[in-house]
Length: 427
Image (cartoon, rainbow, N blue to C red; front, side, top):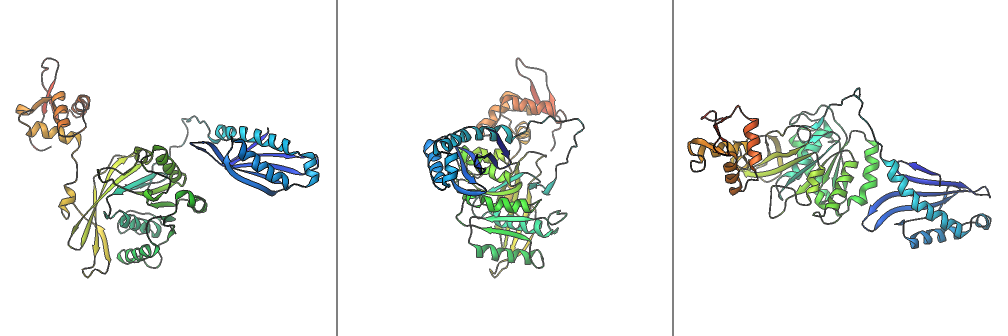
């Protein structure tokens, strides 16, 4: 068959002896666990006769579609195109079109030495990379939704009071979790707290209880009409695609978000661990940046600690601190500002030492395992594992080799090489 590949599917077109134009179309081609599914339609003279969504390799779906469409054709057309012939065309189309779709959907490129190197840019450093995805996760009531809505309002309005935002840009905030009136109230407080006059510029899609699949076409159309848009997804947990611990569900959700361009999705933690977003590891694998959100209350101020736990395209920065300031009479938010670990010491204590800091700590303080401040990589790795830190001898050896400005190598003892601190004071 002479098939026509399109960005959104595959077509087959034929002029019948009667002069009528027959077209078979296939859209929304996708692989499900039961096989290849698609929406298939039969069009005659630019008039849709019938269409259905089904497993294209199943005979029943194809034959139902053909029978229904054939019954709607005129006697003249049916003389030139019998039902059996149309069934055969449909069979051939359903066998070949998915193959063409897969073969032509992606291109193979070779990078030319003269190709322009585009710089990595950020909608807001270090939380949203242009063209990439971020997951901001935290426990319930950790302030992540408030933070994300504030961030959205700043980006859409070009407000530079908190972050270095150069120009306003389109923002779509997808609310799958909260009643509309709560989002309206929150934005009113945010605009007042940040001195944003008039509208914030954020467009909202309120679809509480809906799935990403249900809103996909509306969002995709809006994204296409608004270049440079930033998507906020509140929340990933409400995506409605199935259990979040399943790898295929995680990949499906991340693929859909990546298809929209620049995005930030809100995740939640599990009851057993607050150190990562709940669900399959493929959520974090598919995101370019992952941010852990923690909070603490001091008086009428809610401290928010933002820690980048994963960053693909830059070195991870130190955690940042912000404060939501609420009115003493309970009337709502009155301010949002940068803060510090001194203002919220409980949040500062959440910082986990790096592996380098752990090694330095053992050499400096563990007199039993590092007498005189000296120990080999195997001993240190054992001590770290006993503390619950994931480390191996090779990890520790790599640190010693990479940071010769901090450590001194002592003469080899048997099969091991001891190391100590080059400086005994605080590094």
